[in-house]
Length: 201
Image (cartoon, rainbow, N blue to C red):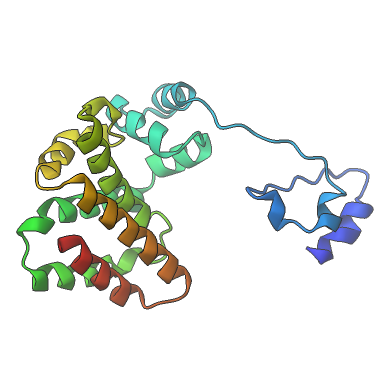
């Protein structure tokens, strides 16, 4: 950031510099003092939903999910809609979780190696978290309209029949803890194997 100071103090006349940041506290005071701050609000779900359907030809079912998942970020929603990796990863994770209770422990843990191809994808654990968040929401409110992954709501509802609120809360904590461990450079495969064992408990 210090390298930016000279440029920010004396920018060329023909240049407008735009810095994008999701945390102002991450900027040095010397950088922040040389900037004008514009706070961008999240878009409404309806705006994201309609844009995906009308301008990007995304199906209503998929757009409904993405407009919730993107949390007001149209750019993220559009990028995710066309990402083959995201869609195949989501399908694989959801299929795995749906069958998790039927797998023996060795088969379940062994599947961690299949997930290695996603270890650089920041959405990987978010999709695990979202699955159990949807399960928790349904268990608590019994309202399928509150499920974010409406395109697989029947699977979520079926899965919730084998869970209770207390156990789901524990599993959400486990996923969150694994996410923190991965940020500390713990072995990906080891962390996911551990998580799977705990999710099967």
